[in-house]
Image (cartoon, rainbow, N blue to C red; front, side, top):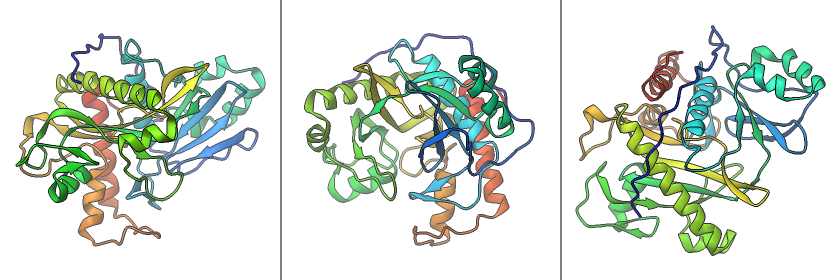
Length: 323
């Protein structure tokens, strides 16, 4: 299923960051209806067709939300998603409309704009106006390398989520072919890995094939682009939905929360790789033998700051911009 899909170079829009690390753990825009709250994002209804997604500085690990926020995290995730949504728009449509706060206010009616301006300190740099979509109830995970839970599964079974792989592969090896390993989409607790056949039973076989093919196509194009910036995208997770029966990419796109980013210049199969994503936090939590159930442990300031720096470094490498 390998493809040689090119991403066209586009001017990069610099996202406006708040000048100080104003850590936002939750939002409460009381004048708007909050229609969803995930591990990281708060979602508000703008009108029948549009939503406002606010990416907080919450961070989760092993599906548990930490009690400490990560400075700049929400702004970095919004900026990186914005970058990718714009860059891949020739490959697939998405729900993205704008992440520029002033433009969002211009695009909404005066009453809504006045409400948003009231909460400007919480919203600038971390808000995204998007089309309201009917979301498929599955996570579309694409793997180009053998790492994380995929490596653990392979070590035991020789397969990853039921996908049989060649023998004698090492940890972090580039896979002979990009693989697709879907999972359920849990609103709380743990997602569950499922087979492609199970996915097809949930959303229909034609839809499953379409999401698989689109996910692999976007991943392979993004992987090729990221290599030119010194980053290996090991794996990533996509979510898809429909607007007027058109399939589009929703949620976030190729961020350090949804992807595993490795520095290309130090890549060495046979062991775990250093990363620009929250794997750093996961490694710390593993080291203290936390049982991976609530309540989460208090994070040391050093871990918080290093995690923030890794998110900022990923943003810089991918976009060429700094916070």
